[in-house]
Image 1 (cartoon, rainbow, N blue to C red):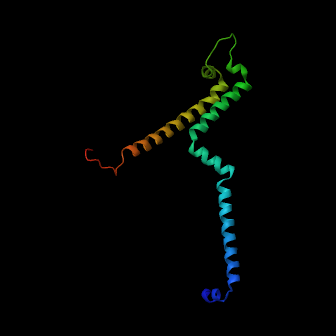
Image 2: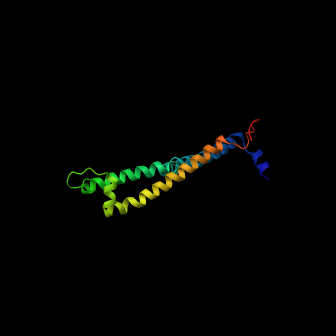
Image 3: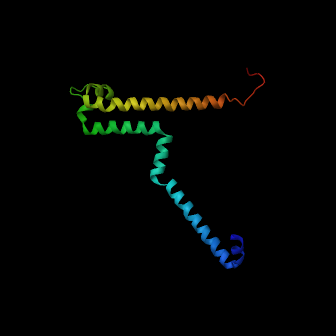
Length: 135
């Protein structure tokens, strides 16, 4: 039944209907592109793709913030030059804040390294490659 109605349309009506369909399709694709390129989506993809870098940056920013907020935690009295992390181990608040962050960063770096190494090995040792001298 749709066929006889389509033949009854004038060329101008058919062009207008096609234009309306194209506008609806364009609006749909524009909304999908806006969702995909929104700052939230870009940030989410970046964090998923570069998790270790984001964690490392957050740890560095956190240590810098703690150093700015509590300058006595980083520089001990008497002019001793101590490592920032060794001073953090002595301080209860610093150890409380940095302990889980370092453990989380270590786990993320190990996961990332494992995934990278597996991908590297798969690219080097492909089951589809059958070299004449390979065992």
